[in-house]
Length: 364
Image 1: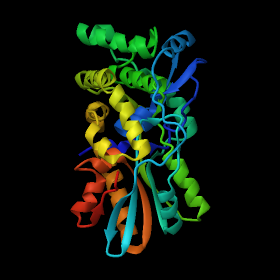
Image 2: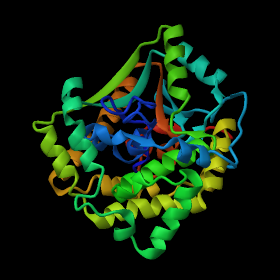
Image 3: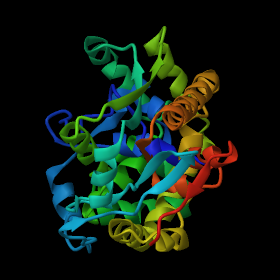
Image 4: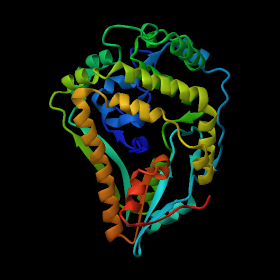
């Protein structure tokens, strides 16, 4: 199954703060990137989502990189249409990464929301871990960020891969020594987050807040979809999470490095194509394999396999059930999905077509 939909799903605990400080240093969240892999893992190890870098490293990394420029208001792609008799569900495709300084506005989306009976929200993944419990778990979560045997990246990566890692780290992060002690997947995901920022991209989508605002303006009910994850022993869940096989951990880092080496320009082109609504160009560019490799690593802890798979299936089924319910009772509804999943042959949008609903693509 294509994993792109995790771009739009997020964990309520541990995933929202984007600029929290860590140990008094410049904070930079990698939660958004973790969401792309698997939101539940980020919820379990919320302490992994924040990392500090020295000011000198951040300063040296902010110089000289070409940014993607998409200025002013942009409409994004048109709407995909799903019909059940006379009932219509319009599906809005979001993209991440997106241009950081872009303002999104679509007259078509506003017109649809004005007619809609419901707007289907993104699915939230909630845990039963309260604030103070998360505070108490933070030391264990921070330890889980590092290699269990205390090894550093130079010791566990091949010389060739370590050389590639060093080149990308210097380009986007400067001379950050602390990250050398991190597990490969988290080092890679943090590097990716820094690369996005330096390239004028953001892992946050401007679409969802705008849709919420429009729904409020036209007094359209927003259907909030939620999956609850019950953790009987969160500390043990963190310990279990550290048992991901190192080979998969390294595979996530390698896929991230490969994406930075080969996909930065396509990533910018993808963002521009989405901003101006060029669906054909999005299909032509395609999407990289990094998310698959990193999700596989995050979900590979043996003791957590069943829990991860259960949550993934519940997220899928929650959205499909809500979409079918809207198609059954509403003349017009709107839903939001990542455009990568809409274009995928095995995503939730494709599953609606497989169930016999008529689907139409927007014109570029």
